[in-house]
Length: 107
Image 1 (tube, one colour):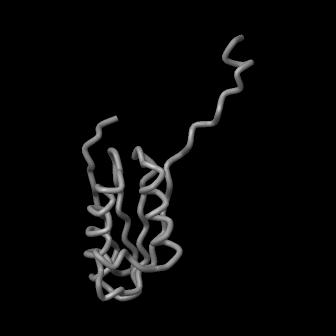
Image 2: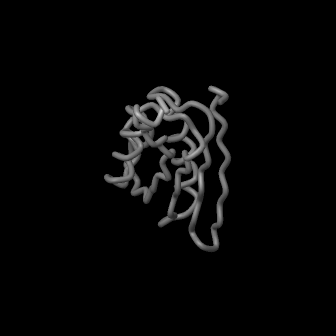
Image 3: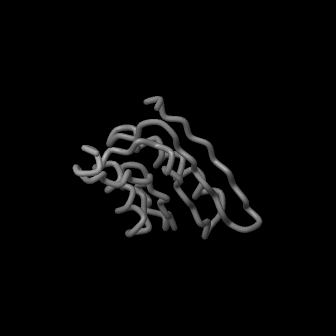
């Protein structure tokens, strides 16, 4: 998987929805790029439902926790959005690989 962060935004203003799709490696540093894109999308229309699709990205645990916190608080971090505008954000998290039992690996 490429470590470069690739972000695509799809916006449907008629239905007040936006989807931010990220691929690549999301770290505690690169997550700020997602936040900036989310802030710009959120500013287009009041009450916009914003979905962050990171299901095809490699996401560090700390970065995933940061995104989940934003989802729970309905606000982006203060350093990204000092005005703290409401942001309805949902995170479509990456799939976790199921652990393979050691006995199955030995067979």
